[in-house]
Amino acid sequence: MDPLAIVQLVLRIVLAAAFAVMGVLHFVPGPARGMRAMIPAPLRRPRVFLVAATGVCELAGAAGLVTPWPLLRFVTGIALVVFLIAVFPANAVAAADPARFGRSAMPYAPRLLAQLALVAVVVAATAPLSGAFV
Image (cartoon, rainbow, N blue to C red; front, side, top):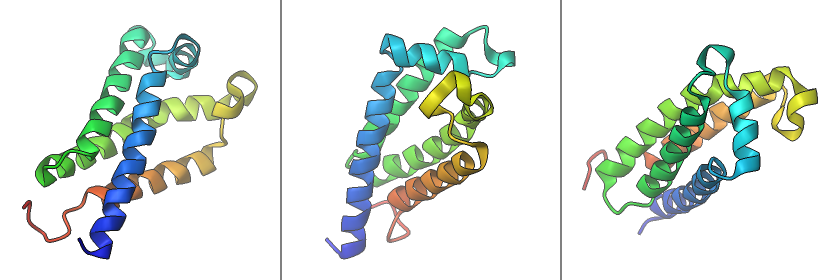
């Protein structure tokens, strides 16, 4: 295994652990309540469903990151990038109300930069190294 492949493996393991923890938190009453509160107003109707669905997405993403199949890891990377873009409005809601969301209310600009960095790490961790899905 070459050094770049080792770096990718480590990134995938770390990302998988992070997405797994966050996915589980979607089903823990306290954190899930805070996540429901972060959902933008136009989407609040199915908010319990949305929190559960995003938790399942994160758990599936964690599993996909550590799968032995390169094509599935690549597809997982694409899905996680789409997911991170889709959940950003909830992060913006939290950023707009720091009194209500406390530590979850990272200011908007740093939150956006962190989200972009996370997208970049997901892409780096899941991009095929050889250009093929072997």
